[in-house]
Amino acid sequence: MKTIFLEKFKGFLSPCTIALDGKNALFYGENGSGKSSLYDAIKICFHKNKLFSSKIPASVTLPRDRKARENDIINSYNNQMNPLSNFSLLINGNDYSSFSTAGYDVNIINAEDIAPRDILEVDTLIQSAMVNIVDVKKFVTDKKTDIETLLNDFLYKNFHEPKLSLSLNLVDSHWRVSILDSSRMSNGVSDNLCANLNEAKLRIINLLILTTAILENDICKSASHHILVLDDIIGSMDSSNRTFVIKFIHEYFSLYQKLIFTHSPSFFNISEYSFMTAWGEKDKWLTFKIVEKDGDAEVVNTESESARKINKRYHPGRNESVIGNSIRQRFECLVQEFSKLICVGGIAETGQILNEINRNNTIYFKQDSTNKVLTIYDMIKEISSVINTDTSGSAISVQLKGILNDYKANTDIIQLRNALSELMIYQKVSLNPLSHSTGYTPMTTTQEIKRSLALLFKMENLMNGLIHRDIYSY
Image (tube, rainbow, N blue to C red; front, side):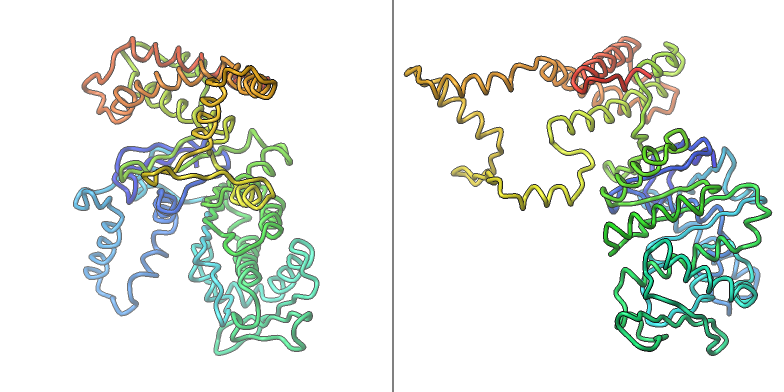
């Protein structure tokens, strides 16, 4: 996939274009931000018939009745702010309803697909997931031995589970999985699985069944476009198993365009580091943050264009709407970088926060007489006020003044804050309206665009100086 365009589709009310350029993509978004909307957009484009089959009872046989049910399903994806207005969904510039999926091998796995279940039937699991296999029963029957062998190999070699083994047995016309954990039991179990194995192991097994089916699918060999979509698949897994999942996807799905969605900051960070740094695939990956603003989802490229690139694309009087949106996204990216410098936030790892809380360092917290929570900045102001009013000239007073002045001496931070403050005004009164402009009425002036670009240049230069390397002028 090169581009995805959504408008009035579930959480996406305003027009949103996601430029993938055929690359892999890592999406971070909190629950409710719009991840599932984007996930559903891909599903409805590439697995529409399977989606219909899963939602329409087999008893509905009349073509007219079936078409009515299909239309109801399609309409359920309209944005609820205007449910009677049909959504727009384009893949590579083509409407989803007429987009040709010939030559595409698209497989989609989400958290619900790999949720633990007491009885695990391989054919039922594959049939319920958006995996590109037509005749599932025949597929599993023909590939039974290969699937069994690969599953055990993956568990042993890739997930380091030497005492865990699986076997497939035909029970009531379904291929049921029997699981043996030799560290805890003497015989394999094929029912009450949730009571006998922990949730993380069951999720890994379900994930491996689906990915093994994808790898063994003959369609994979004949298709020209391979896409793997994973949505929040690491629930209840510890950090080791999450790392094993990333390594497994890297090793066995190198030929696939991978779209990975997560609400976990730690999984996002370890995935980004593994693929882009450890394995040197930075040129093959894009990273996005999905945010919800006033009931409208937006996808922001975390590797947004530099001010220099935006400036090169700017043609006064011709593309203010496009440039305004690029400036706003770049501004939001720089705000996140700034937040990391002063430890305000960014995509913070929960584990790191908990480690800081549980260290032996003193935790500073206070409420004033009105129960307003005071921050460490308030404490520093209070201490500074006491020191500045001290006229004794004591050695400790002089020393503390010197320490505080050292922390306040960096004028770049002050300049950066001033630039952020000014650009924040442009963002509110010019760039946000410009991003949602219809293109018919100018929503801002050339001077505002030029001033915003100048502020972006200033912010990037200041950030370069603060981190002592040039990462913003490319």
